[in-house]
Length: 256
Image 1 (tube, rainbow, N blue to C red):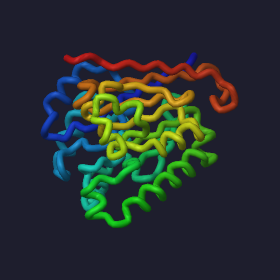
Image 2: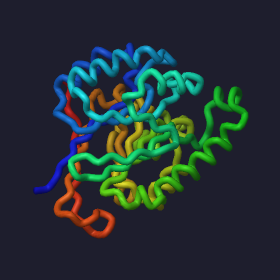
Image 3: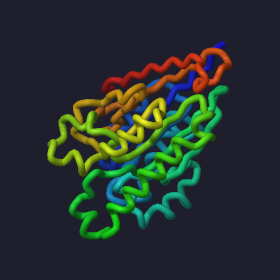
């Protein structure tokens, strides 16, 4: 019998800003096997808000696996504090994890992501930010190309910043290079992860796009007002990478 894994993905709750809306949405969402958080789940470095975020997740989904990357409002100087205090979450910071869920080997590569043009604040306060993004691009490329990732049944790239301009329609076009990365889109085309999940684009009107055979989802809560649901199913025992059948369906749950 084919195994099906249901994934729920969301970002930009900016707790406490959208916390009550987040709670209502989860109460009306289907059961999931894995939660992916694509950054900015708390507002402007308010680390303790993760207690409220996790309380809501646990009240709805129990001990469901939670994997997260950092957003721009999980400030760099707060990262160690977040990891130390909320270690029940698998935190990915230009790193990856491999999970075995219902006989499926799922690899998640997680990153804050990259910008084609660093913001004015970044240029002023992080003098080497352009180099950081270039090095991050290479690291993401290397991880997606690594044997342990390539041998997985299902590969997900989880980023806070947008990984393509295709999901930025609705945002002012002049700002697109400061919201995401067309360079990262080239990496996606080259490496072909099954799914890419990102946040950050609050005003986007496009929540799903395709890059070659990869499906890209903007899961920013202010844009979607939903929990994005991705269901994956592998038929038989043959590896997806060597021609096995993989069925991918996705939909977004409506407003409660």
